[in-house]
Length: 474
Image (cartoon, rainbow, N blue to C red):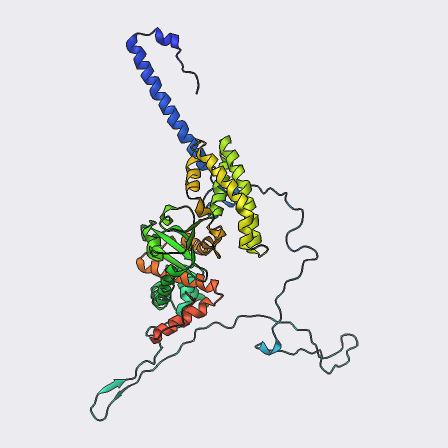
């Protein structure tokens, strides 16, 4: 702080009543300077936040703002390099082709003599093409006949499984996936159906198709959601969204073989308690958000911790920089051992043995941070040290990973959808989104055709019979 503009001698020369007034003014502005300096430090720290040292999503950073790569730029040209193995589409067996045209030369290309015979191994060239796209329209003519005996008229009923509306199951499934899987708006979905498929469509019809898809797939969703409390481990994450003008949250709970999404108006602890049950006995992998603390067994995400330690390295405090670097070294060593465990080079028991000194070193460093007195990291270090058992659950529980990357990967598609759609406009829209996202991600986990499953579920719903068995052994 700079020297005040008035010296002690000048202050002593003033009358006593002016001395107290000047001292009060100086004290007031000194307090303001301290407060403003603290605020500037906080704002400068926020300016330095990035996806590499905070929980900000990668999409929040402009592509041109990414740090310069540490490796020098390669002098090689773009694309495949000399000696690169060629990748090309394998030829289909001839008997599986829709049309085979045999091409034979009629005369010699040198002397013009007529040619005859057949090549036992002709050169095969295959061209893939789309068929002519046109809707398949089936007309059901319901005759109304009059009884000669009593004069009563009777109209033929629609056969079981025929929709009462004008959209068939595969068309409804296609429209639902255009919106939920390929992130198209209702208007653009209607335009796509009309322009490319020759299917007359409006946004109102798309809404009806969305409602039908939700009704058909809701039993699948509820079955999967009911299986969450019985899982040995769950990866949990959440992101903000909107329902009409109201703030909401899109929750993701990923199990080994299925994933459940849920749109709720709250980010509080009552949501995971509702979805997992208050007596959930498995492990919850998550970040350090306090709504998960109600569960006894947690696995805090080391990828989040790594970004927090990077934030210490990037701070202006030399004490924070040193602690961040000291913590980052064993964390990198921990990830190297985990990579070996994940690819099967070492067992989980071997991983536990190798990480024992790393664990001791990290906990000692956290304890050093607790007693440092530095307000930048003393709170974080105390929280991590007090709950240090939640850092190492993955060492003893099969299937649990040190990071929450599985939940973040499952949530990525939903986040891109939210950025394009700005959320939903009603509770019905939220039910459609959570249902479709759940089915889409679960089909991906189980390598199942999502279109076939959705079309089959809608067909069964229209026919009034149960659909396929649940996608997973929940």
